[in-house]
Image: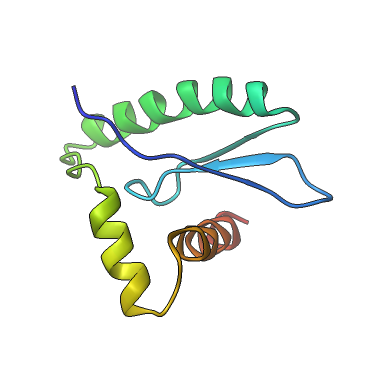
Length: 94
């Protein structure tokens, strides 16, 4: 079974937002961390089901080493890199 990374982000005036670096456009949120986690457990399989129905293949899971390599190349920490990725995904989803 493949395991994919999820990124949880919380701004002071927002719910907890969950994004998946391997699946741009798969975004969910919850008022609490537990709710966000539960929503993420529903959102990713639904997104994957849609990809498969469209005949698309699933990406290989991104490893932390790959994320770290991309972050270093941009002079960022892993957290900063993932925060920027989440912000971009949320802007695209708006």
